[in-house]
Length: 173
Image (cartoon, rainbow, N blue to C red; front, top):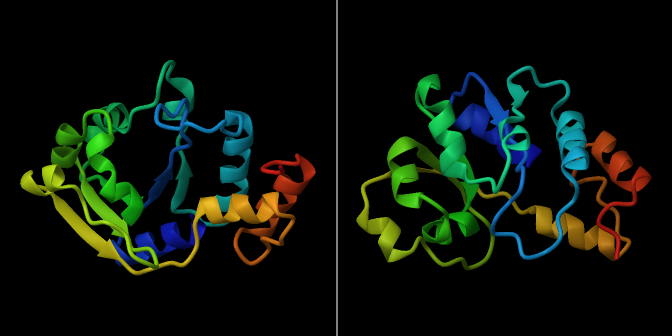
């Protein structure tokens, strides 16, 4: 995520990029890492880049976290870009309030290696703006999988994050 965020800063000429750890993700079928750990890892990952800002909006809001609620709360900030992967773009039609969301943000879509389905026809029928970001060959799922198999992640995450994950025994089988 750090590499993608750095790329987005430059490609989109952003003044800042907000990191918003999900409070209670409503679409996750698997158990997720506790919010305190996710927040701590984000803080460690973004340290040193003044244009990265940690925003606790979803951690502080009770109930399920919906991107549309977060975007509604941030609308006054000016033009909003929502940085997502091509896999998320393909499933956007399953998100809560996705039709409204498309009218409130510019999607910045990071390409992924390998074949991915394009956006759903429902999404393509609605007017929206999506800008492509260059391809990055890394994913959070891939990182968690490597940890579970005991493989190194040093080249995939900042050293402070790798150390935190190891110290707290996160993502191990």
